[in-house]
Length: 184
View 1 (spheres, rainbow, N blue to C red):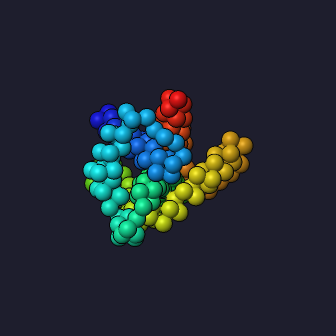
View 2: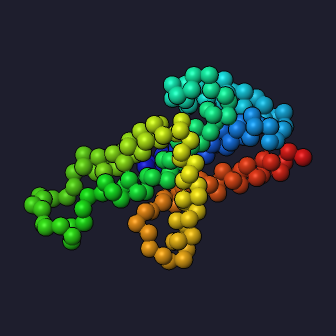
View 3: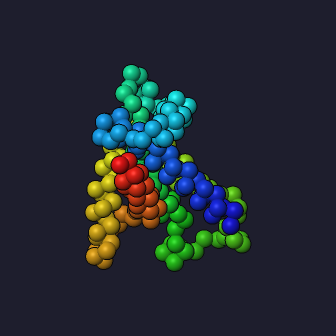
């Protein structure tokens, strides 16, 4: 239960940071003028959180504009949520029915369970940090929509997108829509 609560807390914190990054991206692109109540939140985000969260963007583009750091932060989250389900499936132990019987004494140890849980997360985080400054993870948006439509039509697909990707998009889109509707 503690693991589920921790995962939910991390997801909520991630969505909160994504919302602030998206608002900063929209504001720096002059697409919307945000209310002055949001200015202190965006100021703290830009001055204190963004240099830590988007530290890798300085290596790619030292004199980066504000929008690039915000976009790379969003891209890293999209990359992680898009590939985590596939990484977990690819790194899972083989099914006992498909492989010859292994001589295993007892159940799986805690160390093996920990490695099976942690390794996909570590590799997805590494991939997100490396590829986020390229902004290529934004291509996961049309790919996820395409794969979602295939799944709704019951068409087969070897690639699996986690449900948290779609929930993340829904939360982010709903929050941005709600905040933009309150701007008037």
